[in-house]
Length: 312
Image (cartoon, rainbow, N blue to C red; front, side, top):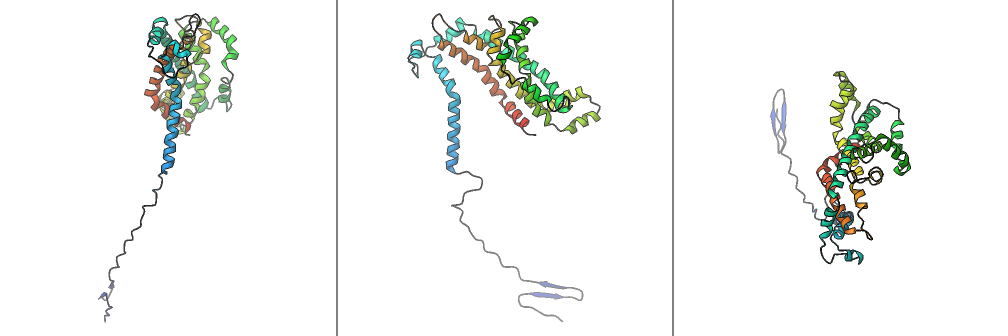
């Protein structure tokens, strides 16, 4: 016995019955107007304009001192005394006199050499110290705070004992001696900056290295240092810039042109009755070039290293 339903077909069998229903009606597509609906995640046009304006203002404010020095380096003494914004003529004699009458290149060499020695000394002390504090749990929880507290006091407080110690050690009036002292003074800063990089590494890596038969020294050299390389580069750049721009310690420990740095040399650029601002501006701009080139070529490692150290 079989029954037939309208709009359907039935296949009757002794074991099974299959019911074939008519195909479902197609749903109508409804068009929704989205012309007035903004895309999610896209900021309004006013916010974008404000952000761009803030960025442009920040760039101009950061470049304003440099632009002022550029203008002063091409001003004549009369233009400097008259407080003119733009020079009446381009006084190239400021640059020729700065490099002809003053040993600017020797000052630059001394600054670069002292900064390089300071970086080596600071890293040679801070890397093992950070490994012992952060990975080997040596010294307790207060060790890092005690090391950083050594940098809290201004250097002027320790000027007299520092001068006596440096003179007794035979490091006076020496670029290498200046770099060693600067590196020792900046070691607390390097330890503090490297602490985040060493603590960000999982301790399971040390355990795996110990299982493979690595001791503490080999673990530091073969495992930890490659992982903290971006942080080490970032800290090296920071220490280098701090030493390169320092004025007080080089003024105290250097006495001759053979060891004086650029900040000290610029401070000495004075005539009989006047300060040669044009020549000082030219010398200052020449000293900015190495730092800007260093920041330009190493900014990827600097930004990446600082970002990695801030994430734990």
